Image 1 (cartoon, rainbow, N blue to C red):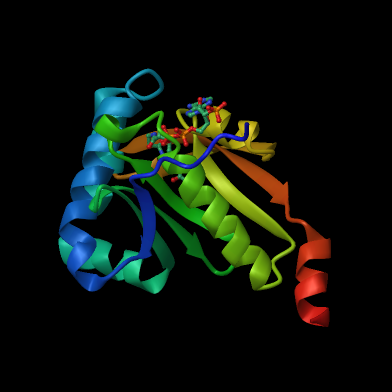
Image 2: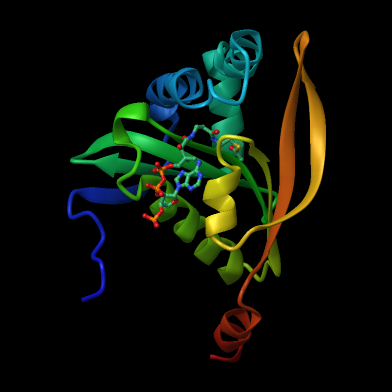
Length: 172
Ligand code: ACO
């Protein structure tokens, strides 16, 4: 039998009032889930991107941001920038391993494909790289980015989207 989605798992669009809770998910996710790959100083520099709630809210609101909820409470979020770039993907540490990340990325892929994007691009953290590779993303290059006083490594990956699907939509 085909695996069914978690019955209590749902998706909804980001709303301005969500910035505070997504900021907490962002920070907790980095703190608890990336320690194998990044030093505490690197994690702190990374997490500080959400220190200014108004600025973080602006970033979330300017992108196509989706929230995954478990029994109605936000458990993770992902955002699409410029039509073909996955900018953010963060799942709360208490909600990992239940398909939350997969649900979010599947939805962004469908939305991007529906908007005629041919491929999706992601600069994935070393902690998330395996997740993306499992979903068919292919590594293109390693990057070292400057965040505050720290340098963080990530990997650019691409995934070719199903063109036949976009073509079918255009024809109908
Ligand atoms: N490496 C390899 N496989 C993984 C990883 C990983 N790091 N994480 C999950 N998987 C696998 C799971 O085992 C599962 O496999 P299955 O389908 O065979 O069961 C599949 O990927 C789907 O897993 P989910 O349960 O949907 O993933 P989850 O909800 O746990 O979220 C995520 C994964 C987003 C990587 C989460 O661990 C996280 O938030 N990490 C820390 C924050 C982070 O680094 N975010 C990315 C930053 S880069 C960016 O934002 C673009």
